[in-house]
Image (cartoon, one colour):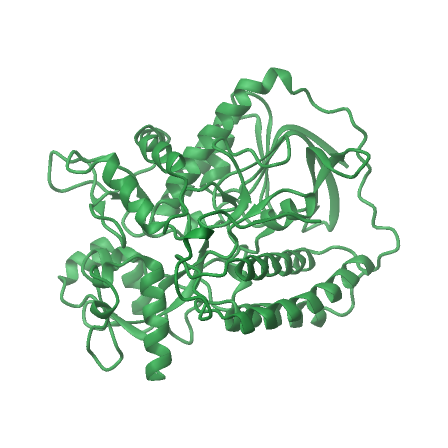
Length: 529
Protein backbone atom coordinates (compact mmCIF):
# COMPACT_ATOMS: atom_id res chain seq x y z
CA UNK A 1 0.00 0.00 0.00
CA UNK A 2 1.22 3.52 -0.76
CA UNK A 3 0.59 6.45 1.58
CA UNK A 4 1.09 10.06 0.52
CA UNK A 5 1.97 12.86 2.90
CA UNK A 6 3.67 16.24 2.73
CA UNK A 7 5.94 15.49 5.71
CA UNK A 8 7.19 12.08 6.71
CA UNK A 9 8.80 12.27 10.17
CA UNK A 10 10.63 9.18 11.40
CA UNK A 11 10.72 9.33 15.20
CA UNK A 12 8.51 10.71 17.97
CA UNK A 13 10.94 12.40 20.37
CA UNK A 14 11.21 16.11 21.06
CA UNK A 15 12.67 16.84 17.59
CA UNK A 16 10.02 14.95 15.65
CA UNK A 17 7.04 16.16 17.69
CA UNK A 18 8.01 19.83 17.81
CA UNK A 19 8.66 19.74 14.07
CA UNK A 20 5.28 18.08 13.46
CA UNK A 21 3.49 20.82 15.38
CA UNK A 22 5.07 23.49 13.17
CA UNK A 23 4.87 21.53 9.89
CA UNK A 24 1.15 20.90 10.40
CA UNK A 25 0.56 24.55 9.50
CA UNK A 26 1.98 23.85 6.03
CA UNK A 27 0.58 20.45 5.13
CA UNK A 28 -0.15 16.86 6.13
CA UNK A 29 2.21 15.09 8.52
CA UNK A 30 2.84 11.39 9.11
CA UNK A 31 4.91 10.38 12.14
CA UNK A 32 6.34 6.86 12.07
CA UNK A 33 7.47 5.50 15.45
CA UNK A 34 8.55 1.95 16.08
CA UNK A 35 6.98 1.42 19.50
CA UNK A 36 4.36 3.40 21.39
CA UNK A 37 4.43 7.09 20.48
CA UNK A 38 5.97 8.21 23.81
CA UNK A 39 8.86 5.69 23.70
CA UNK A 40 11.93 7.74 22.79
CA UNK A 41 15.27 8.86 24.18
CA UNK A 42 13.58 12.17 25.04
CA UNK A 43 11.21 10.34 27.38
CA UNK A 44 14.17 9.10 29.43
CA UNK A 45 16.02 12.43 29.64
CA UNK A 46 16.24 13.26 33.35
CA UNK A 47 18.45 16.34 33.54
CA UNK A 48 16.84 19.08 31.50
CA UNK A 49 17.31 21.64 28.77
CA UNK A 50 20.10 24.22 28.91
CA UNK A 51 19.20 27.84 28.12
CA UNK A 52 20.10 31.32 29.32
CA UNK A 53 16.99 32.53 31.17
CA UNK A 54 18.53 34.25 34.19
CA UNK A 55 20.02 37.75 34.32
CA UNK A 56 23.07 36.44 36.21
CA UNK A 57 23.92 34.26 33.19
CA UNK A 58 24.84 35.27 29.62
CA UNK A 59 24.88 33.95 26.08
CA UNK A 60 28.64 34.48 26.01
CA UNK A 61 29.16 32.17 29.00
CA UNK A 62 26.90 29.45 27.61
CA UNK A 63 28.67 29.68 24.25
CA UNK A 64 32.07 29.51 25.91
CA UNK A 65 31.12 26.49 28.03
CA UNK A 66 29.91 24.68 24.91
CA UNK A 67 33.07 25.49 22.94
CA UNK A 68 35.36 24.38 25.76
CA UNK A 69 33.49 21.10 26.14
CA UNK A 70 33.56 20.49 22.36
CA UNK A 71 37.39 20.34 22.39
CA UNK A 72 38.00 22.44 19.28
CA UNK A 73 35.52 20.76 16.93
CA UNK A 74 32.37 22.82 17.57
CA UNK A 75 31.22 25.04 14.73
CA UNK A 76 31.21 28.42 16.44
CA UNK A 77 28.44 29.92 14.30
CA UNK A 78 26.19 26.95 15.11
CA UNK A 79 26.92 27.22 18.83
CA UNK A 80 26.11 30.94 18.74
CA UNK A 81 22.74 30.68 17.00
CA UNK A 82 21.61 27.64 19.02
CA UNK A 83 22.39 29.38 22.32
CA UNK A 84 20.87 32.70 21.22
CA UNK A 85 17.72 31.10 19.81
CA UNK A 86 17.08 29.21 23.04
CA UNK A 87 14.80 31.68 24.87
CA UNK A 88 12.02 31.78 22.23
CA UNK A 89 12.12 27.98 21.90
CA UNK A 90 11.80 27.61 25.69
CA UNK A 91 8.88 30.04 25.65
CA UNK A 92 7.29 27.92 22.92
CA UNK A 93 7.60 24.74 24.97
CA UNK A 94 6.00 26.48 27.94
CA UNK A 95 3.22 27.78 25.67
CA UNK A 96 2.63 24.19 24.47
CA UNK A 97 2.13 23.10 28.08
CA UNK A 98 5.53 21.96 29.36
CA UNK A 99 5.62 22.52 33.12
CA UNK A 100 9.19 23.16 34.23
CA UNK A 101 9.87 23.14 37.98
CA UNK A 102 9.17 26.58 39.43
CA UNK A 103 11.64 28.50 41.58
CA UNK A 104 11.01 29.01 45.28
CA UNK A 105 13.14 32.16 45.30
CA UNK A 106 11.43 35.05 43.48
CA UNK A 107 11.81 36.97 41.23
CA UNK A 108 13.24 34.05 39.20
CA UNK A 109 10.34 32.02 37.74
CA UNK A 110 12.06 28.65 37.25
CA UNK A 111 14.41 26.50 39.28
CA UNK A 112 17.70 26.20 37.39
CA UNK A 113 20.00 23.21 37.77
CA UNK A 114 23.72 23.02 37.11
CA UNK A 115 25.46 20.14 35.41
CA UNK A 116 28.99 19.15 34.44
CA UNK A 117 30.86 21.68 32.31
CA UNK A 118 28.42 24.54 33.02
CA UNK A 119 29.77 27.60 34.82
CA UNK A 120 26.25 28.75 35.77
CA UNK A 121 22.90 27.34 36.78
CA UNK A 122 20.99 27.34 33.48
CA UNK A 123 19.28 23.94 33.16
CA UNK A 124 15.49 24.10 33.18
CA UNK A 125 14.00 20.85 34.41
CA UNK A 126 10.82 19.14 35.55
CA UNK A 127 12.26 17.64 38.73
CA UNK A 128 14.23 14.64 37.36
CA UNK A 129 11.69 13.64 34.69
CA UNK A 130 12.17 16.47 32.21
CA UNK A 131 12.00 14.35 29.07
CA UNK A 132 8.85 12.61 30.24
CA UNK A 133 7.18 15.96 30.90
CA UNK A 134 8.17 17.34 27.49
CA UNK A 135 6.84 14.21 25.75
CA UNK A 136 3.56 14.47 27.67
CA UNK A 137 2.99 18.09 26.66
CA UNK A 138 3.99 17.65 23.02
CA UNK A 139 1.83 14.56 22.54
CA UNK A 140 -1.15 16.40 23.98
CA UNK A 141 -0.48 19.28 21.58
CA UNK A 142 -0.11 16.94 18.58
CA UNK A 143 -3.38 15.19 19.51
CA UNK A 144 -5.17 18.51 18.88
CA UNK A 145 -3.97 18.62 15.25
CA UNK A 146 -6.21 17.01 12.64
CA UNK A 147 -3.62 16.74 9.87
CA UNK A 148 -1.00 14.86 11.94
CA UNK A 149 -1.20 11.06 11.93
CA UNK A 150 0.99 8.92 14.18
CA UNK A 151 1.78 5.37 13.06
CA UNK A 152 2.82 3.46 16.18
CA UNK A 153 4.64 0.12 15.98
CA UNK A 154 6.00 0.99 12.53
CA UNK A 155 9.70 1.03 11.62
CA UNK A 156 11.49 2.53 8.63
CA UNK A 157 13.36 -0.01 6.50
CA UNK A 158 15.03 2.11 3.83
CA UNK A 159 14.75 5.57 2.36
CA UNK A 160 13.44 5.81 -1.20
CA UNK A 161 15.76 7.66 -3.57
CA UNK A 162 15.38 9.12 -7.01
CA UNK A 163 18.78 8.60 -8.63
CA UNK A 164 20.56 9.74 -11.77
CA UNK A 165 21.95 7.41 -14.42
CA UNK A 166 25.17 6.99 -12.43
CA UNK A 167 23.29 5.96 -9.29
CA UNK A 168 23.84 9.27 -7.46
CA UNK A 169 20.87 10.25 -5.25
CA UNK A 170 18.97 13.22 -6.69
CA UNK A 171 16.39 13.54 -3.91
CA UNK A 172 14.55 11.61 -1.23
CA UNK A 173 11.00 10.52 -2.07
CA UNK A 174 10.02 8.93 1.24
CA UNK A 175 10.60 5.53 2.84
CA UNK A 176 9.60 1.89 2.94
CA UNK A 177 8.04 1.21 6.36
CA UNK A 178 7.22 -2.05 8.12
CA UNK A 179 3.95 -2.34 10.05
CA UNK A 180 5.39 -4.48 12.85
CA UNK A 181 2.10 -5.93 14.11
CA UNK A 182 0.73 -6.87 10.66
CA UNK A 183 4.13 -7.82 9.16
CA UNK A 184 3.32 -5.68 6.09
CA UNK A 185 5.63 -3.28 4.24
CA UNK A 186 4.12 -0.02 2.98
CA UNK A 187 5.43 2.79 0.80
CA UNK A 188 5.33 6.28 2.30
CA UNK A 189 5.71 8.95 -0.38
CA UNK A 190 6.53 12.43 0.95
CA UNK A 191 7.57 15.87 -0.24
CA UNK A 192 9.96 16.04 2.69
CA UNK A 193 11.41 13.26 4.80
CA UNK A 194 12.80 14.14 8.22
CA UNK A 195 14.94 11.78 10.28
CA UNK A 196 14.44 12.29 14.02
CA UNK A 197 15.10 8.71 15.06
CA UNK A 198 17.35 9.47 18.03
CA UNK A 199 20.57 7.76 19.02
CA UNK A 200 22.36 4.43 18.84
CA UNK A 201 23.24 3.46 22.41
CA UNK A 202 22.15 -0.17 21.91
CA UNK A 203 25.22 -0.74 19.75
CA UNK A 204 27.04 -1.05 23.11
CA UNK A 205 26.62 -3.72 25.75
CA UNK A 206 25.95 -1.24 28.59
CA UNK A 207 23.85 1.81 27.77
CA UNK A 208 21.43 4.25 29.36
CA UNK A 209 19.32 4.25 26.18
CA UNK A 210 16.01 2.42 25.73
CA UNK A 211 15.86 -0.66 23.49
CA UNK A 212 14.70 1.41 20.50
CA UNK A 213 18.05 3.28 20.20
CA UNK A 214 19.51 1.20 17.37
CA UNK A 215 20.75 3.99 15.08
CA UNK A 216 18.06 3.40 12.47
CA UNK A 217 18.12 6.88 10.93
CA UNK A 218 21.91 6.97 10.67
CA UNK A 219 22.01 3.55 9.00
CA UNK A 220 19.18 4.43 6.59
CA UNK A 221 20.85 7.70 5.62
CA UNK A 222 24.21 5.95 5.09
CA UNK A 223 22.65 3.31 2.85
CA UNK A 224 20.96 6.09 0.86
CA UNK A 225 24.29 7.83 0.24
CA UNK A 226 24.13 10.73 2.73
CA UNK A 227 27.22 12.08 4.45
CA UNK A 228 27.79 10.76 7.99
CA UNK A 229 30.04 12.75 10.34
CA UNK A 230 32.05 12.32 13.56
CA UNK A 231 30.79 8.89 14.53
CA UNK A 232 33.85 8.26 16.71
CA UNK A 233 32.54 10.63 19.39
CA UNK A 234 30.36 8.48 21.66
CA UNK A 235 29.50 10.01 24.99
CA UNK A 236 29.55 7.55 27.86
CA UNK A 237 27.45 8.83 30.72
CA UNK A 238 29.64 8.48 33.83
CA UNK A 239 26.90 7.42 36.20
CA UNK A 240 24.62 4.53 35.31
CA UNK A 241 23.21 2.67 38.32
CA UNK A 242 25.18 -0.50 39.01
CA UNK A 243 22.87 -3.24 40.27
CA UNK A 244 22.25 -6.76 38.89
CA UNK A 245 18.50 -6.13 38.67
CA UNK A 246 18.63 -2.57 37.29
CA UNK A 247 18.40 -2.28 33.52
CA UNK A 248 20.18 0.81 32.17
CA UNK A 249 18.94 3.27 34.80
CA UNK A 250 20.64 6.65 34.52
CA UNK A 251 21.69 8.66 37.56
CA UNK A 252 21.32 12.19 36.25
CA UNK A 253 24.30 14.51 36.03
CA UNK A 254 22.15 16.90 38.05
CA UNK A 255 22.95 14.78 41.12
CA UNK A 256 26.57 15.90 40.78
CA UNK A 257 25.30 19.40 40.01
CA UNK A 258 23.59 19.43 43.40
CA UNK A 259 26.75 18.38 45.23
CA UNK A 260 27.17 14.65 44.58
CA UNK A 261 30.78 13.49 45.06
CA UNK A 262 32.40 10.61 43.22
CA UNK A 263 34.30 8.27 45.52
CA UNK A 264 36.12 4.97 45.31
CA UNK A 265 34.42 1.87 46.67
CA UNK A 266 36.60 2.08 49.77
CA UNK A 267 35.66 5.70 50.45
CA UNK A 268 38.02 8.48 49.24
CA UNK A 269 37.07 11.00 46.49
CA UNK A 270 39.21 10.76 43.35
CA UNK A 271 38.10 13.37 40.80
CA UNK A 272 40.46 16.04 42.17
CA UNK A 273 43.27 14.08 40.47
CA UNK A 274 41.66 14.51 37.06
CA UNK A 275 40.10 17.98 36.74
CA UNK A 276 39.84 21.33 38.60
CA UNK A 277 36.02 21.03 38.55
CA UNK A 278 36.33 17.66 40.35
CA UNK A 279 33.01 15.78 40.26
CA UNK A 280 31.50 18.50 38.06
CA UNK A 281 34.02 17.99 35.27
CA UNK A 282 32.70 17.38 31.73
CA UNK A 283 31.38 13.90 31.05
CA UNK A 284 34.30 12.62 28.99
CA UNK A 285 36.74 13.47 31.77
CA UNK A 286 34.57 11.83 34.42
CA UNK A 287 33.84 8.70 32.37
CA UNK A 288 37.56 8.16 31.61
CA UNK A 289 38.45 8.77 35.26
CA UNK A 290 35.92 6.20 36.47
CA UNK A 291 37.05 3.71 33.82
CA UNK A 292 40.67 4.22 34.90
CA UNK A 293 39.91 3.82 38.61
CA UNK A 294 37.79 0.69 38.07
CA UNK A 295 40.53 -0.95 36.00
CA UNK A 296 43.17 0.08 38.53
CA UNK A 297 41.29 -1.21 41.59
CA UNK A 298 39.50 -4.18 40.06
CA UNK A 299 36.24 -2.97 41.59
CA UNK A 300 33.03 -3.31 39.62
CA UNK A 301 31.88 0.27 40.30
CA UNK A 302 32.55 3.56 42.06
CA UNK A 303 30.22 5.48 44.37
CA UNK A 304 28.27 8.70 43.89
CA UNK A 305 27.69 10.15 47.34
CA UNK A 306 25.05 12.81 47.98
CA UNK A 307 24.18 11.69 51.52
CA UNK A 308 25.33 15.07 52.91
CA UNK A 309 22.27 16.77 51.37
CA UNK A 310 18.96 17.00 53.23
CA UNK A 311 16.68 13.99 52.73
CA UNK A 312 13.59 16.08 51.95
CA UNK A 313 15.56 18.06 49.36
CA UNK A 314 16.65 14.83 47.65
CA UNK A 315 13.13 13.39 47.61
CA UNK A 316 11.72 16.62 46.14
CA UNK A 317 14.53 17.29 43.63
CA UNK A 318 15.08 13.69 42.49
CA UNK A 319 11.83 11.79 43.13
CA UNK A 320 12.34 9.38 40.22
CA UNK A 321 15.95 8.58 41.12
CA UNK A 322 15.14 8.35 44.83
CA UNK A 323 12.27 5.90 44.32
CA UNK A 324 14.06 3.80 41.69
CA UNK A 325 17.15 3.40 43.89
CA UNK A 326 14.91 2.55 46.84
CA UNK A 327 13.48 -0.34 44.78
CA UNK A 328 16.99 -1.82 44.85
CA UNK A 329 17.54 -1.21 48.55
CA UNK A 330 19.53 2.02 48.13
CA UNK A 331 18.35 5.05 50.12
CA UNK A 332 20.32 7.87 48.48
CA UNK A 333 19.92 10.04 51.57
CA UNK A 334 21.91 7.45 53.54
CA UNK A 335 23.69 5.25 50.98
CA UNK A 336 26.17 6.23 48.26
CA UNK A 337 24.95 5.11 44.82
CA UNK A 338 27.03 2.46 42.99
CA UNK A 339 27.63 3.70 39.42
CA UNK A 340 29.47 2.75 36.21
CA UNK A 341 29.85 4.51 32.83
CA UNK A 342 27.42 3.55 30.05
CA UNK A 343 27.00 4.52 26.39
CA UNK A 344 24.65 7.48 26.43
CA UNK A 345 24.77 9.88 23.47
CA UNK A 346 26.28 10.01 20.00
CA UNK A 347 27.74 13.39 19.01
CA UNK A 348 28.11 12.34 15.38
CA UNK A 349 25.39 11.36 12.96
CA UNK A 350 23.89 12.42 9.66
CA UNK A 351 25.76 15.56 8.59
CA UNK A 352 23.46 18.59 8.25
CA UNK A 353 23.79 22.31 7.61
CA UNK A 354 22.38 25.16 9.70
CA UNK A 355 18.84 24.27 8.57
CA UNK A 356 18.97 20.53 9.08
CA UNK A 357 19.48 19.75 5.39
CA UNK A 358 21.45 16.59 4.66
CA UNK A 359 23.61 16.07 1.57
CA UNK A 360 20.52 14.59 -0.15
CA UNK A 361 17.83 17.06 -1.31
CA UNK A 362 14.48 16.84 0.48
CA UNK A 363 16.00 14.75 3.28
CA UNK A 364 16.41 16.51 6.63
CA UNK A 365 17.63 15.37 10.04
CA UNK A 366 17.34 16.84 13.51
CA UNK A 367 17.92 15.70 17.06
CA UNK A 368 20.46 13.09 18.13
CA UNK A 369 20.43 11.38 14.72
CA UNK A 370 22.08 14.46 13.20
CA UNK A 371 25.55 16.00 13.39
CA UNK A 372 25.10 19.77 13.42
CA UNK A 373 28.47 20.94 14.74
CA UNK A 374 27.00 22.08 18.07
CA UNK A 375 28.61 19.37 20.19
CA UNK A 376 31.99 19.03 18.50
CA UNK A 377 34.02 16.28 20.15
CA UNK A 378 31.93 16.24 23.33
CA UNK A 379 28.38 17.33 24.19
CA UNK A 380 27.84 19.81 27.00
CA UNK A 381 25.20 18.44 29.37
CA UNK A 382 21.57 19.32 28.54
CA UNK A 383 22.44 20.91 25.19
CA UNK A 384 20.81 18.04 23.29
CA UNK A 385 17.14 18.85 23.96
CA UNK A 386 17.96 22.46 23.15
CA UNK A 387 19.57 21.47 19.84
CA UNK A 388 16.49 19.40 18.96
CA UNK A 389 13.96 22.23 19.38
CA UNK A 390 16.16 24.86 17.72
CA UNK A 391 16.82 22.66 14.69
CA UNK A 392 13.20 21.53 14.42
CA UNK A 393 12.28 25.20 14.16
CA UNK A 394 15.00 25.86 11.57
CA UNK A 395 14.06 22.83 9.47
CA UNK A 396 10.47 24.03 9.34
CA UNK A 397 11.52 27.60 8.54
CA UNK A 398 13.67 26.37 5.63
CA UNK A 399 10.90 24.15 4.28
CA UNK A 400 8.32 26.94 4.60
CA UNK A 401 10.50 29.22 2.48
CA UNK A 402 10.75 26.62 -0.31
CA UNK A 403 7.40 24.88 0.12
CA UNK A 404 5.60 26.26 -2.94
CA UNK A 405 8.57 25.33 -5.15
CA UNK A 406 8.64 21.67 -4.07
CA UNK A 407 5.55 19.82 -5.31
CA UNK A 408 4.84 16.19 -4.54
CA UNK A 409 6.93 14.00 -6.84
CA UNK A 410 5.16 11.97 -9.51
CA UNK A 411 8.11 9.63 -9.99
CA UNK A 412 7.10 5.97 -10.03
CA UNK A 413 8.05 4.15 -6.83
CA UNK A 414 8.21 0.40 -7.07
CA UNK A 415 6.35 -1.40 -4.28
CA UNK A 416 8.38 -3.38 -1.76
CA UNK A 417 9.61 -6.61 -3.30
CA UNK A 418 9.72 -9.59 -0.94
CA UNK A 419 9.82 -12.22 -3.68
CA UNK A 420 12.17 -15.11 -3.05
CA UNK A 421 12.18 -14.60 0.73
CA UNK A 422 10.75 -16.92 3.37
CA UNK A 423 9.81 -16.71 7.04
CA UNK A 424 12.87 -17.10 9.26
CA UNK A 425 13.00 -20.25 11.35
CA UNK A 426 16.40 -19.52 12.89
CA UNK A 427 16.05 -16.47 15.14
CA UNK A 428 19.18 -17.52 17.07
CA UNK A 429 21.24 -16.05 14.21
CA UNK A 430 19.80 -12.61 15.00
CA UNK A 431 20.17 -12.84 18.77
CA UNK A 432 23.71 -14.26 18.61
CA UNK A 433 24.97 -11.57 16.22
CA UNK A 434 23.22 -8.84 18.19
CA UNK A 435 25.02 -9.91 21.36
CA UNK A 436 28.37 -10.35 19.60
CA UNK A 437 28.32 -6.86 18.05
CA UNK A 438 27.48 -5.19 21.35
CA UNK A 439 30.22 -7.04 23.24
CA UNK A 440 32.72 -6.35 20.47
CA UNK A 441 31.97 -2.62 20.56
CA UNK A 442 32.10 -2.51 24.37
CA UNK A 443 35.44 -4.31 24.56
CA UNK A 444 37.25 -2.78 21.57
CA UNK A 445 35.57 0.55 20.69
CA UNK A 446 34.66 1.79 24.16
CA UNK A 447 35.87 4.62 26.38
CA UNK A 448 39.56 3.80 25.79
CA UNK A 449 40.66 2.54 22.37
CA UNK A 450 43.84 1.46 20.61
CA UNK A 451 44.77 0.71 17.00
CA UNK A 452 44.90 -3.01 17.73
CA UNK A 453 41.46 -3.01 19.39
CA UNK A 454 39.94 -1.04 16.52
CA UNK A 455 41.47 -3.37 13.94
CA UNK A 456 40.01 -6.40 15.74
CA UNK A 457 36.59 -4.75 15.89
CA UNK A 458 36.68 -3.85 12.18
CA UNK A 459 37.54 -7.41 11.14
CA UNK A 460 34.85 -8.96 13.32
CA UNK A 461 32.13 -6.48 12.28
CA UNK A 462 32.91 -7.04 8.58
CA UNK A 463 32.35 -10.78 8.99
CA UNK A 464 29.12 -10.25 10.94
CA UNK A 465 27.84 -7.77 8.37
CA UNK A 466 28.36 -10.24 5.52
CA UNK A 467 26.45 -12.89 7.46
CA UNK A 468 23.61 -10.47 8.17
CA UNK A 469 23.45 -9.27 4.55
CA UNK A 470 23.08 -12.88 3.37
CA UNK A 471 20.40 -13.49 6.00
CA UNK A 472 18.59 -10.24 5.05
CA UNK A 473 18.34 -11.27 1.38
CA UNK A 474 16.87 -14.69 2.17
CA UNK A 475 14.23 -13.92 4.78
CA UNK A 476 11.27 -11.59 5.19
CA UNK A 477 12.02 -8.43 7.14
CA UNK A 478 11.15 -8.23 10.82
CA UNK A 479 11.76 -5.51 13.38
CA UNK A 480 14.58 -7.50 14.96
CA UNK A 481 16.30 -8.10 11.62
CA UNK A 482 16.01 -4.43 10.62
CA UNK A 483 17.49 -3.32 13.94
CA UNK A 484 20.32 -5.86 13.75
CA UNK A 485 21.16 -4.69 10.22
CA UNK A 486 21.20 -1.10 11.46
CA UNK A 487 23.36 -1.55 14.56
CA UNK A 488 25.86 -3.48 12.46
CA UNK A 489 26.19 -0.51 10.10
CA UNK A 490 26.44 1.93 13.00
CA UNK A 491 29.14 -0.23 14.61
CA UNK A 492 31.02 -0.23 11.31
CA UNK A 493 30.75 3.58 11.02
CA UNK A 494 31.91 4.20 14.59
CA UNK A 495 34.88 1.88 14.18
CA UNK A 496 35.88 3.27 10.77
CA UNK A 497 35.65 6.86 12.03
CA UNK A 498 37.70 6.03 15.13
CA UNK A 499 40.42 4.51 12.96
CA UNK A 500 40.52 7.70 10.86
CA UNK A 501 41.11 9.97 13.87
CA UNK A 502 44.74 9.43 14.89
CA UNK A 503 44.66 11.55 18.04
CA UNK A 504 42.84 11.78 21.36
CA UNK A 505 40.23 14.52 21.50
CA UNK A 506 37.05 14.90 23.53
CA UNK A 507 35.21 11.60 23.69
CA UNK A 508 37.71 9.76 21.49
CA UNK A 509 40.73 8.45 23.39
CA UNK A 510 43.32 6.25 21.62
CA UNK A 511 46.21 4.85 23.65
CA UNK A 512 48.43 4.95 20.54
CA UNK A 513 47.76 8.68 20.00
CA UNK A 514 47.28 10.15 23.49
CA UNK A 515 47.71 13.81 22.46
CA UNK A 516 45.57 16.28 20.53
CA UNK A 517 46.72 16.80 16.93
CA UNK A 518 45.79 20.31 15.78
CA UNK A 519 46.06 19.22 12.15
CA UNK A 520 42.92 17.16 12.79
CA UNK A 521 40.55 20.01 13.66
CA UNK A 522 38.06 18.82 11.07
CA UNK A 523 35.07 16.53 10.80
CA UNK A 524 35.43 12.83 10.06
CA UNK A 525 33.18 12.27 7.04
CA UNK A 526 32.09 8.84 5.80
CA UNK A 527 30.00 8.24 2.66
CA UNK A 528 28.91 4.92 1.25
CA UNK A 529 30.89 4.04 -1.88
